Length: 151
Image 1: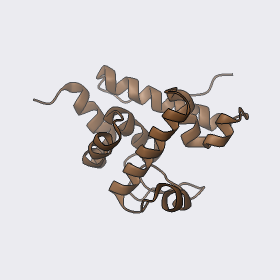
Image 2 (image 1 turned 60 degrees about the vertical axis):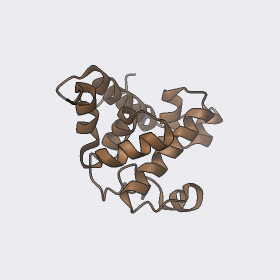
Image 3 (image 1 turned 90 degrees about the vertical axis):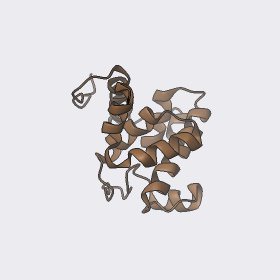
Image 4 (image 1 turned 120 degrees about the vertical axis):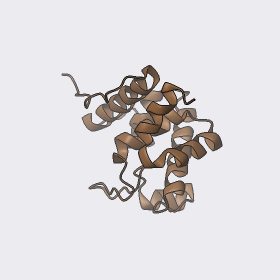
């Protein structure tokens, strides 16, 4: 029997559940965390492309994917694994601080490590991923709405 938490992260990961599971096993990151990132980044769209040019389920920038992560960002499994490895690196860089790692995933690690002001979208992104992660851990049936920044 599948545990409720497993069903919930599978629901977040959508068609990428198996790829998320493989990336989780290879990096040691929680499949719930990776599924939350996939959900927030692409809403389950394999061919998602952002206005900045980031692509795929984990919204990798093609140059970063190819030159730094050494993955093909157009191949789903490599995209998810590359994103997971990058997030794992960021978690190490920011001493396990998930919020900082997520902000860096969104806005870039240099901005976060230098203490530069982040765009509100990076903070909202981190809050939204963390909300999805809490949802999956709690086994809540409905997806939470988008987290809004407060003034």
